[in-house]
Length: 108
Image (spheres, rainbow, N blue to C red):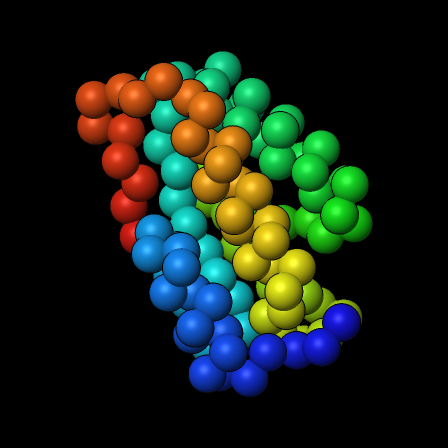
């Protein structure tokens, strides 16, 4: 898997405005907020299954109704297309949950 240069990473990140790009670290991060723990855990389960399918796993944490996800490709030493594929899959999974007041994600 080929590591993206900073221009390519920035171009891909622009299609994911809710994600924070750290080009120097070679990561993209996002915080997802849900109505409750069950929704958060259900989301994590869906993303975990996609991660297994793509053999590309996130760095993440969950506290009650909040899930923080970071993607990077360790083998490549930075961002690759897999990171953005997984970020898009996470966005689609998040979109399947019913909108909740105050559920908007925040930038990490």
